Image (tube, rainbow, N blue to C red; front, side, top):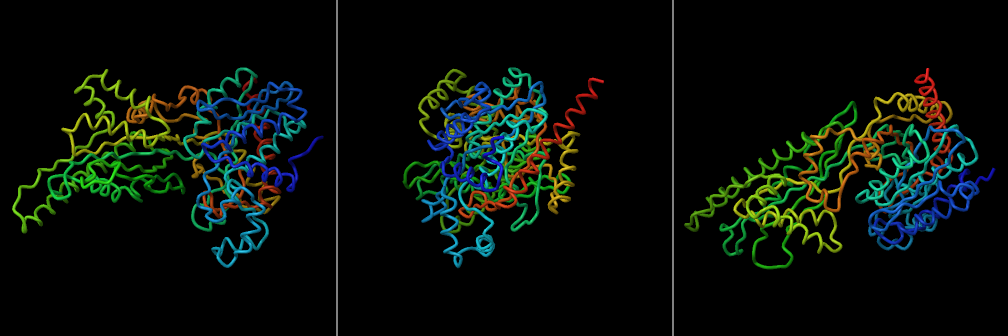
Length: 550
């Protein structure tokens, strides 16, 4: 038996090699790491004998994702091991940026700075049990442990097939996973596979600061990126009451939306965090004494069982309330200023539209062909503009055709979109999780807790499709980029419909310069827990298959 990725030392060495590839989303390092992992597996005897089971698959933008199938003779039951290999940037590391991808050197250097560290970080450093660095926690440790499971499968240790799928771009737009979904359906048919479950190994996410709990998950939370485009009335700063500043409009929306717990959703004892702003700016491209008359604000909304239709209705209510309060604010300030200067204030009426309604009004005004021509022209000259900014540009262009509706607030959506998924009603997953909790307690005295939703967002979202068609239309018809460089493989997601769960490592501070991984749990306990999970799923899947045949 050839064992390279089984011991704590071997897995730490593999993790270090993966982290040292600076696979920041959208960079050449992301491309290089996919190729590195391909050749890492290509040299193994199993894939030398079965080269067709190991592949790099193209993503539309030149990046690739990796699939590696280890098949047992006569077996059809298959577990997908899912992961991502991209990481967020390292600008937050400051003078330690040069060490962000060198975990041992970074950990050593941080130990010399104990006096400047937050108390909990200093405590972890002094324990000697934690390894620091970008990607150690999120999520190259989970990927390393999955490599270890794949190696066990190569040695015939499981009574079923393992299919490793690791993708780029999870930290941005999930382009890797969106490309992987149809490929998974193709592989299923090509190799006669029955997908029993998909196991992700994202790290446990704390539910509150210094949360000491250990979690496993039977689903993943959903995300909607909701946008509010504000078009005011332009004017010179010397005549501010002749216009309406879009920054005022967007500020009122921000005040109403930020941390608004009416958007929170409770399922059992799990609660979604409230919305928070991810981008807000006016759209002036240069300084001038004209007031900003267009602005945009984007909000992160997390969902579990709530439908898109319900969310949209709430967003429109917020926009309507903001519109009313903007009107009142303008009138009150006008009245106050009239004690100094006699003038007739504007009769400000703020309209609220969805993107779908705005598009319809633009088509009614200039015709479908002209609207299509403008969208195609902007798309052809997009350059390297990101999805968020380009979505805003498309809304802005349509709004410029419909200035008679200004001032207005337009509700729209931007990529990425993550559907909420859950295996709470899947008997095999639920049985496996309960047995795993018992196993962890009995063998390691670790009190695992099961949650329905992984709150850190993950590509598990694309393994199922539970959202109803009418509700999805509310999203896609109000998403300017949908069908225009962005799509969801809805039919393939529905066809896959694979039960999901997440069993991963312990770490702290994802997306922070203090990101770190707990080595004893991750490389001594987790491999056994993941092995147990895989074995149990195969056992239960086999039992169900025999019952169905009977």
